[in-house]
Image 1 (cartoon, rainbow over the protein chains, first blue to last red):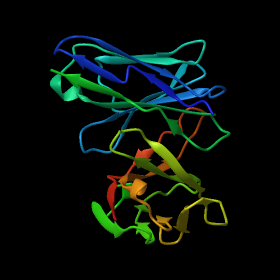
Image 2: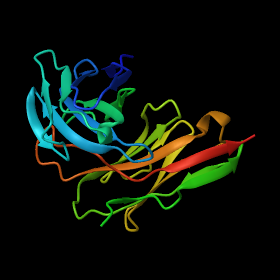
Image 3: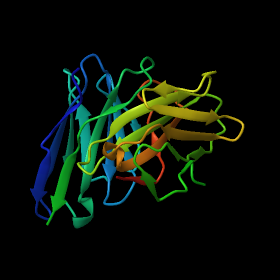
Image 4: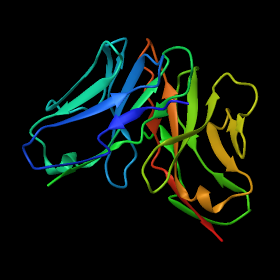
Length: 113
Length: 118
């Protein structure tokens, strides 16, 4: 069965650079969630989209933005990167109001040097 | 207050034994969902099992079962006949209070690192 696809798997950036993370949800899933997991931490919710509209917002820095496109894939754009942005970034997808399960991608490991 | 509490930072269990990972939650919402995820050292987050607040029976998925005690607000994960491949970080998570589609985010506990000993 198709899963949530995230790219790239690993990303190394310098301070003050920008990064774009991509997420392709499971086919037919209309909702995408982004989470950030720092080293040794639990995942923290950043932002979500339902039917291409932002549906909820968590602790996402103003330097970050995201969107969901017409094909339901989503991108997380991160600017002015800081050392503290180094983390594992997960995307998850679900079928809103139907399937209760939230499926995660394998994550993008971002390292800011 | 913590919404999800996992009181066992680490556990060591002999292979083939059963193991129970504890999870308590805090919510005033009558409708909520509880999840368990496994995170191996490779990093991916693997869905294991789900329990809805209105489900009458405890959820089971193969070797995984969820011991749901609503009055105690606990949702412990039970793994039967543990295997070496079960060594991983385990997170309990809750979805609550969603008011519209796309507002169904999860709140995670701090996790339990399970190590299976041969």
